[in-house]
Image 1 (cartoon, rainbow, N blue to C red):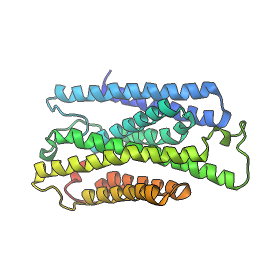
Image 2: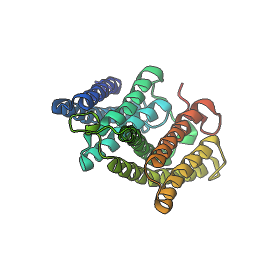
Image 3: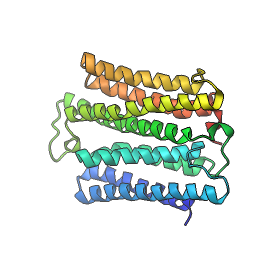
Image 4: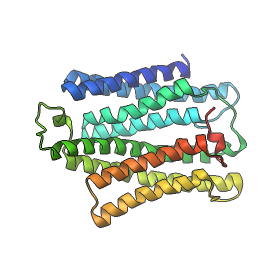
Length: 284
């Protein structure tokens, strides 16, 4: 079995997990919840093995690099980090229903990678031939994943808040009864961003060090660097407003969603639509 086959299995497993989470949300069936979380764990395990196999395959081909070098590999890794962060959250807080709003992100990433991107293993371009590749990519994508989880939680918050404002009761037998209380959702959104923000900061710092190694300058206002800074300021504003102004609730949820939209543009929009020093990250 090779990595491509395992990535296909991972994609299918994430699909089953997402559908089972939806069934769990709609029916409150414990069996659906167990299937959903089990498939999430199984998919993460399969994807971990597949990433390791792809790494080995690159050495077998004489290329020999971590599978983080192009758009396909980065999307696969992004999906892996999203599921990892969600499962760690589930272990700590056991709000399983959050998976219905997070697993779609992981599934969309894997489906796009398998269907729409070049899956070939290619030699590293000179700018990527550095140990900074691992440090920068891992820290950035763990931060991005935490923001994805925060976005899913924020969507849940807005749905629950609208329901409560309409004067409807979230009884134990209703779908809304599956949602955590809005105060809990607000707190989980904040905690997720508190995980992602320092990781993004480390990603920017390691990226600057890598840029100096590769191009002789720490910062060149390349579109990717500029958008990374924009994303950093959005989440810095979120934390500043939360800590000093007491921003909670809807404003915090919307800012979290806006921040994740900016994150996605920084990651994909810049690579696909803007030219710059990071153009090698485009995904033909």
